[in-house]
Amino acid sequence: MNLNSKKVTAQLPTWWSSLLLFFMILSATSCRDHQQPPLTSIHPYFLAGGSFEKYMDSLSQSSPYAFSGVVLVGKDGVISFKKAYGYADDEAKTLNTLTTRFNLASVGKMFTAVGIMRLVQEGKLTLTDNLGKFFPDITNEKTKTITISQLLTHTAGMGNALDDPDLKGKTLNHQQQFSILKNKPLLYNPGKAYAYSNTGFVTLGAVIEKVTGRDFYEYINELILSPLRMTNTGYYQKKDNYPDMAKGYMLDKIFAPTKKIETSDRVGDQKGTAAGGAWGTVEDMFKFTHAIVSRQLLDDKHTRLLLDPILAEQEPILNPDGTFQYEDAPVREGHKRGLGSETIQFNGINLSGHTGGIFGYSAVFFVNPETGYVIVSFQNVDPEAKNRAAAENRFTRLIKSL
Image 1 (cartoon, rainbow, N blue to C red):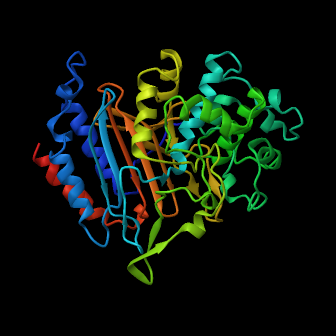
Image 2 (image 1 turned 180 degrees about the horizontal axis):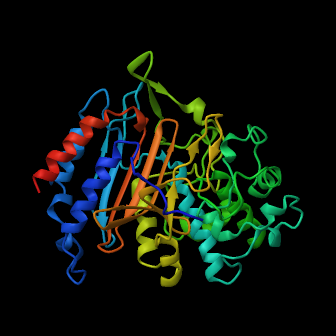
Image 3 (image 1 turned 135 degrees about the horizontal axis):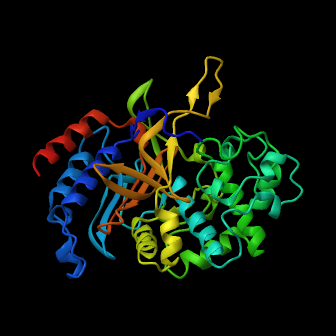
């Protein structure tokens, strides 16, 4: 796989590109003496009342493109700043709070990745195991050769299960979903390119069910959610009527660019999967992130395998006929993948974690492994509709003030 012949500059598509850049530069200037009490090693910018809060306050006031959601920053297991902005229900004027649940979208892939890495750590599977070992009835010979490592790094050649018409409107466990997807044509030969794949993570969910003999949701609950007391996180459905669930909104960019459109119907009532779609709060996600970096969920070796960037992302080439070329596609500079995680690199600083987005929701959590800083941000207004230039201008002014 040739990932170095061409490069493209990374363009983070949402307002939080500015937030992440700001966070990375402050990470580089923060105190790194972990022997001190936690709060004394946190840069003043990240304390309540500091410049970071002022920055977020300014984003929340840029109507009609105001930030709506919850943001948290912490370090060494201690939360230094957390604040909610905007409305969980715009029509009822119900405010977002620190206990508001948001759709995590693809951030939930990290639950799956940790689940797989725990099975690797326990010797119940290996990263080089292929799908043919677990599902010998696969008829597509190339699919049989796909390895666990390729699924985790989005290099298996699988597509997007969320768009598959054979799954629409069906309530299936992961093995049942995979039975529908397993013989679909691949986008490219396994291991020959990178292409973000929800199908690959649904497949990992099927592997978990096959290896453990248990339901995916039960496994994730007993491994992660229950022991970490992530009581406000789960794979909910609208019909479950859980409290404090934020409605998602998009802006009608064409006909009414200042009007919010509620997106519940577009998100649907489908239960989240191993590819994403769980619901949760920022404080629960902080617990999860701290459990990763403090080696509560995996030992040091497998935590490093999870977080360390090993592969550059690629940007598929759109052909004149509307198809995509994946092999030898240009690299997204500053964007890499670990075995299940996502890493953004800027100014020599790595942020490892994951991002997610679905109609009306966006989610991001990152940790800087060197300093221990963690940032979690959940949002319930479509970030693509944000006034990106205004956010970048605010960011620039803050950087100049350092």
